[in-house]
Amino acid sequence: MANKIPRVSVREQEPAVRATNFEEVCYGYNAEEAQLEASRCLNCKNPRCVSACPVNINIPAFIGKIAEGDYTAASAIISEDSSLPSICGRVCPQENQCEGSCILGIKGEPVAIGKLERFVGDWSLENECKGCVDVTPNGHKVAVIGSGPSGLACASDLAKMGYEVTIFEALHKLGGVLVYGIPEFRLPKEKIVAREIDNLRKLGVKFETDVVVGRTITIDSLMDDEGYDAVFIGSGAGLPRFMGIEGENLNGVVSANEFLTRANLMRAFDEEYDTPIYVGKSVVVVGGGNVAMDAVRTAKRLGANATIVYRRSETELPARREEVHHAKEEGIEFRMLTNPTSILGDDKGWVKGLRCVEMELGEPDESGRRSPVEKQGSDFEVECDVVIMALGTSPNPLLKQTTKGLETNRRGCIVANEDGATTREGVFAGGDAVTGAATVILAMGAGRKAAKAIDEYVKSK
Image (tube, rainbow, N blue to C red; front, side, top):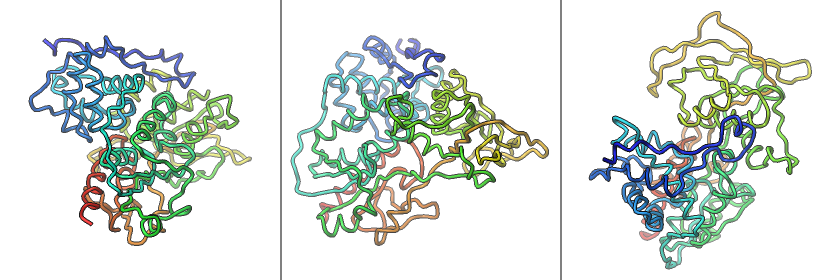
């Protein structure tokens, strides 16, 4: 029986080797492995995995085609709902979504849906399998702000509907958080991200880089002067948060956002680029999410002893289990139930350590996680040269400041309804700009919902 077949393991670089390079950790399935893993799927009549997927990919259908060896058909099925399968297969938290709902996971291991999606996505890129529909222009223009996952998903769906879509990107490279936020060893930029974006070009999507909407141009001018029928804001959340503790202005204290941008976008890890990052001998990353894992694993690869400091226990770590597992394999130290109280500096203004206090878990907070409570008299110090704050991010306030009628909430996030419509007519938003920092696939789901709502809005005018 299919459910008696053990889950097919994925080949990976050895931990001691990969901790010294930026090559991709996971090699993915080959065709034989993918077909064997696909044969485990029960093809449920009421597949819970589909409803658990934010973009509702027909998962049993594409897996069934893999089992048959028909990868072209598998690609076509995925492309109906996702424009970034190679990316999502690598970075989505499948354990909390599709795989977390797989019936096989109740008594055993769920189907490796993410790894199978990655296999199909990579096969499609290698074989130039476009998987896209014939497009008939409808004569309408839509502007998309930001080339991250929500913007790309929205643009893809709109282009397939016949819209003339232009994506405006503030940076010099396309991809948003996919390029500046996620390390090369988790998501190769040229091999995967650039080629996925190329598929949107083939759909007719136009791209303009180095355009800061709110400075170079405004949403008002796009709609009032340049003839765009609607605008989608997918600008993400790139404004870092800090703790507000003593010593945060010392040299050697950086946000994870800045650290990863310098490493990924400016290729600080590449000796051919004159853009190094100072990590010293020891780096402490404060936080426990995926961004914290990306930062600490990057610091390790840059040659530092790297440590995670997190105020809750390992059970409450919000990062993906796979990322935590990989970090531990690579020699990352985890100091759980630990909270910084101040950053210590030397007489030249550089970081020399972190003063912390031990924590214990109390009652659950609003998120359902048990609130950490400080243990009295438990202060101690950790020596380090660099402190990286990975405490989350907020949207940039620039768009609200320069757009008439666009409201934000107390966290600085754009106010939008379930379909992405904002308080400004004709302007829609989705992804981290609305929710705050979240996942790639949730941002894509928001982009797709907004595309549908934009189409309905334009047709109703």
